[in-house]
Length: 240
Image (cartoon, rainbow, N blue to C red; front, top):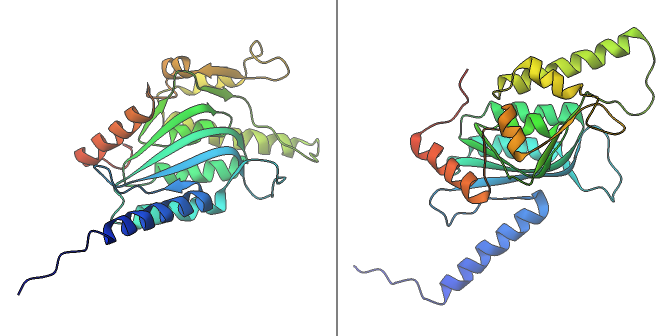
């Protein structure tokens, strides 16, 4: 018994439906799972300001952590998705929310690659380091500075201790997930000769690689190629 071939007219409709689904996914979540490449990867974008426990004004471009966390769980569980590409262009944002996302990415078994475009500032630094392999464009920058707090802050020793412990969490995560030492990272964080009205350091792409924060320079093609290499090599979780 022979099976009838799929009518040629149906193929454009299927392609159009796939494109419409991808467009809707981009609009809703700022991510996409293209299926026409050599491997099926998920592209997650972290842009603008990372929104945490408090809703930011509507004119702010934000990445909401309650949207990102379920996506990461779904990516890790979906057998079709072979790897994760994280595109970063962020000014930072909520420290606990950003660190929570970074911890989830670093604990994934599937291959992960991050690419910093434009900027990976503040809490964007741990996010960039959280992937198995990290890349940065030569024109991108990363700002490293101490933890800041907004709103009412009680000037008591407990407040300073809380900020200090939060900063230690960030330093510990970054040094465990990159090649920079704790001493070098603290020196960049407390530099007083770089920023006009603040303490910290701005690194361009080349300097970020030299410092050991990021693995190598590259752009989109390099990031996808690195992710394909990890997939084909069967590499996943970061080494202990």
